[in-house]
Amino acid sequence: MSPSFGFGDRTGLATPGHVLAMQRDGAGIEPIFPQQSIREMSRTQRTAVQVMGEALSGAAAAGWTGITGADADHLKTPDDVDVTAAAGFTFFTIDPSGAVDQRTDSYSEQELRERFAAVRDTAPWFEAYRGRQVALSTGTVIRLDEQACMRAAVKYGAAIQQ
Image 1 (tube, rainbow, N blue to C red):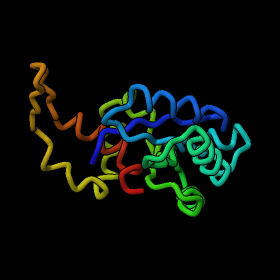
Image 2: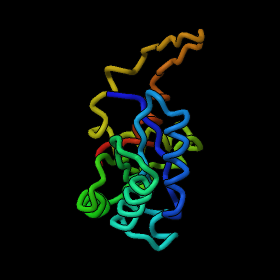
Image 3: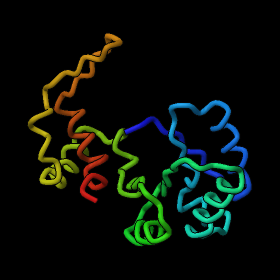
């Protein structure tokens, strides 16, 4: 595995400049020229095939002969994965944000307990983490008390299950 950098040519015109940057200062870094989110493709009215083709042809035209990865970003559905995989993308960033309960931090203790009871079976990790402490190298200590673990399960449980 090597360090990499995702350039994400949003218009289909910038990859030659990205290649120049890599040739000049990119030693030790593997480029990700085709990198785009489904949302960006939709907003710019580009398909996964167009993003891949324009990035690769722009790289070749600028003299790039090395390898490149291709990141399909913020994928929300299995169809998003299928479409980008068929276009040749090589890795995929899944975005489960639609399943995250954004209101969790404002729940009262009673409401939190009720919601946790409803999702308890989706959090097999709960007992293993409840009561633990994690000491970071900065000196910060993260305390995983019961309430913090319940909030994590309620907030992210459905997203993790996806």
